[in-house]
Amino acid sequence: MRTIDVLRTALGQLRSNPLRSFFTLLGIIVSVAFLVAVVAVIEGMNAYVRENVAGAIVGVNVFQVRRTPLSVGLYDDDEFRLVQRRPRIDARDAEAVRAALPDADAIGVQSGWPTPLADVQWRNRTLGSVQIYGITAPYQTVQDYQITVGRPLSELDVVERRAVTVIGADVAEKLFEGVSPVGQTLRLMGARLEVVGVIGRKGRVLGQSFDGFALIPITLFETIYGRRNTTVISVKMGDAARIDDGMARAEEAMRLSRQLRPTDANNFSVDAADALVDFWKRTTAVLFAVIPAVVAIGIVVGGIVIMNVMLMAVQERTYEIGIRKSMGATARDIKRQFLTESVALSTAGGAIGVAAGWVLAVAVAAFSPLPARITAWSVVVALALGAGIGVLFGVYPAARAAQLDPITALRAE
Image (cartoon, rainbow, N blue to C red; front, side):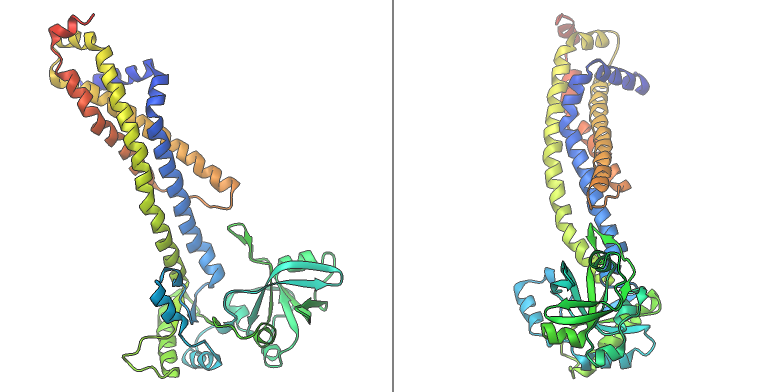
């Protein structure tokens, strides 16, 4: 019997019982759809962190000298306690990095996490949950801030601890609706700050605005909030190719500044945006470890259902099998026919599941802040799972059909 005839017969059987075929495939469809959709969201998040979040948080062509590493969330308790005993980043460290990197585009210092959230007031208006950053003037270059109105913070503002601020676009729009913010006076934690500039819109990341902030001189920040344990030095290089060399020189400068011996471990961290991306990928790897177990349960259940349905089909078509054998069909032909039906059934389930997962991923991207990105490998794996389950759970029913005695089978009617 030709392969095309076997396939045509198998598809004919599926078309003759569409409702039974659909419910037979439901377990595979749901499992494959879950696999495709979840992988799409995770891959979309990975790409989004790599392309948007890392640059927005750390900066483009930027690395940071930090007390705590970006990947601190993956440390165990003992390692975390060691990190907590590190000395704070101070002005001497910043000067050492500046001296070692005269070719850097900008070297700025900013207050570390947790970033204070505060109410800012203007006249009778109050805006809550504004992020307050203490910075030195070059930090504005590090973050590629564009001043749309007024001027940026200057070194003189920092040195003289001036009560001035540069605000983000959201703060300007919500607090000063219909009024130019520059020259107005804000109230923050009892301090009166003159608005000297407004920064252009940076946009939203995962539904969170990056424009609801106020920048103040770091000297003024420390007067209001105290000195942070997590102050960060940010270094912006001219292009990405120079980052590795810059990080090596900054590390050497920090070790010399802190008088560390060759055998001493660093009591600071030098991280680029890649560290944040790697941290995120290692975190999502946990999800990738759980997904196969969840999908496997659904796939196995779906495979068992297919095997039971194929056994029922063998029982229902005993007379047909007898006719085929009496007309010269071999046991191999019968086995191939039923195995092809099983594979066709499960592959159809995989294809429907891929389509359903694709639609679900698009819906998640359209109606939630989560991005989704369909990957070719997840589609291939889903289809391969469908076909593989058909082979695995179709062998036994096919073997049962092939072993039927043609005389006994003809008597079945």
